[in-house]
Length: 116
Image (cartoon, rainbow, N blue to C red; front, side, top):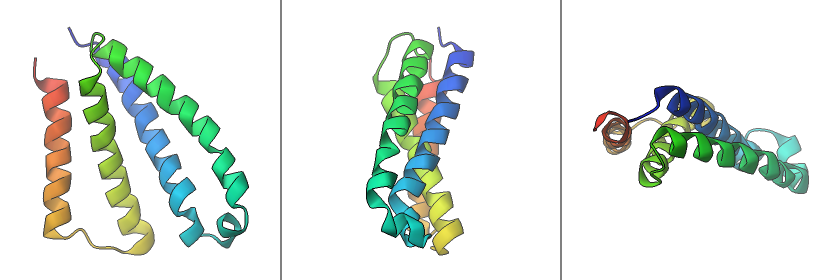
């Protein structure tokens, strides 16, 4: 049986990690300080990796030891975070093609969480 509280914790951690990853990778296009301090920005990957490891632990436990649902959940969250932040920071529109991809990501998350 799925443990929703563990899934919620894991989902929040995946959400946080994907937001941090977005800024770690794309901050160079937003802030000049990121361009000038690439090594320092890269080192933040250690903390992000720790968050991802914990997110994986919680979601695998939430899915009763299954790994595949965790991977799909993380992928779907990453797609949604990326689309929203690219739109916000770079004004890249969500085209019909991107919209369909995001819908598929939501369906992927729903299948993994709701299908029993």
